[in-house]
Amino acid sequence: MSTPKDRRDRQVVARAWGSVLRAAREAAGMSQETLATRAHLDRTYPSLLERGRRTPTLTSLFAISRALNVHPSALVERTWLAYRAGCAGAHLPEGAPPPPNPPAAPERVLGTADED
Image (cartoon, rainbow, N blue to C red):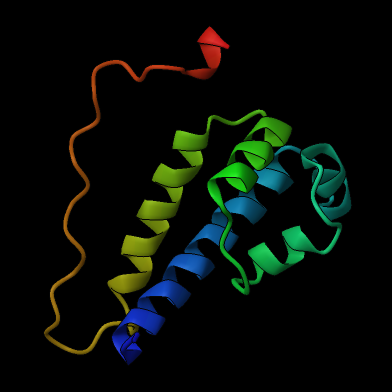
């Protein structure tokens, strides 16, 4: 059973992902419909993601990153940073600690876009 905090955290993550996706899509000069077509997703799915109504599965994340020509880890890292920024504001009760820092990045990430 989820608690209100769990639901709130999921909402913050979904909104963080949505803002990252929108920024990446716009930077690529792509419409939501074009993104959906290139990622082989339903045409309404990018809108749901960008509005924080859905969160992607790993399969969807990989398809979206391929369509945007952005490594999945870059999208996840940007989402983490947006999530932390969102949690630093009104989303957490006063005095609540922020989420923990992410682990240090490895020197080299296996399977990077350069190796594909």
